[in-house]
Length: 291
Image (cartoon, rainbow, N blue to C red; front, side, top):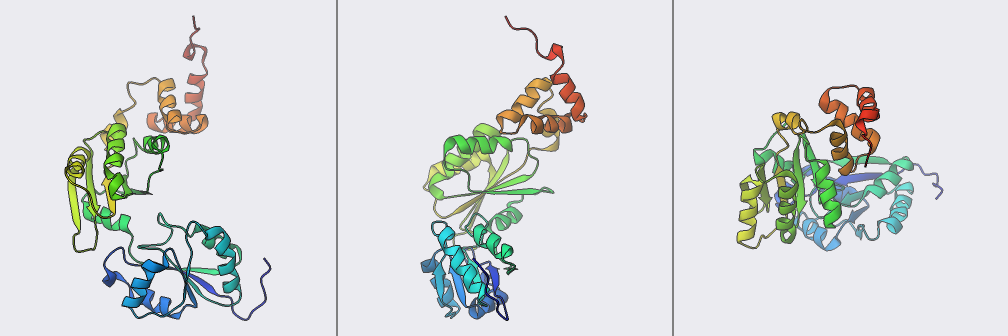
């Protein structure tokens, strides 16, 4: 697509919206949605409620995972013609487990300014209120839908020291907690944050085991964020000590790492040079004859 020369090229605004309570909308976000030429919404029916609350009359168009590929060129053309576009998701900050990455990548490719309008993020809200804090936090979002892929994904982070935050639909919460217990153990501290910022906001604090007991007692309602503590430093240092170097490398390979990356991780764990790990693995004694 050729860009037509215009006096002013448009701007793409990435606008965060409330995750529940409409009062969490910022003044800047309201002003931006009023001033742009069009709002690209994940679900126009959902966003219409927000716009009506703030008396915003800006036209909308649907921009979601199912039409993003074909709709992105249309929005790019509008911005190249000088129009401003605001991207919003159903709740929270766009692209955080929501569509829109293709549009932003194309906007950058065409030299269109991409301006974030910060606001609510469910993962951050859940983490700061959980009481499970570390120097690092990994936002995982929704797990892969197939059990095999979800298990492989979770297994990669079994020894991660960072706190982990997952999103989950209420009807899949038990299944997800069960998977984490099977891979990480049930004793890790965990918090289920349910209906955050809404009237029935609730935080269930305990361990993965106790969160499982709670989730199995009654039907869970409302979208959930699950915060799980990372492996403590002492456990991180100790988990591999009973393994040989070959077995240690095999653990990382089963988690999906390449052989080269697995050796690098083993070298970090053991505080050795990678060349020493390589030399050990390829020494004749490391591969005893079979039979």
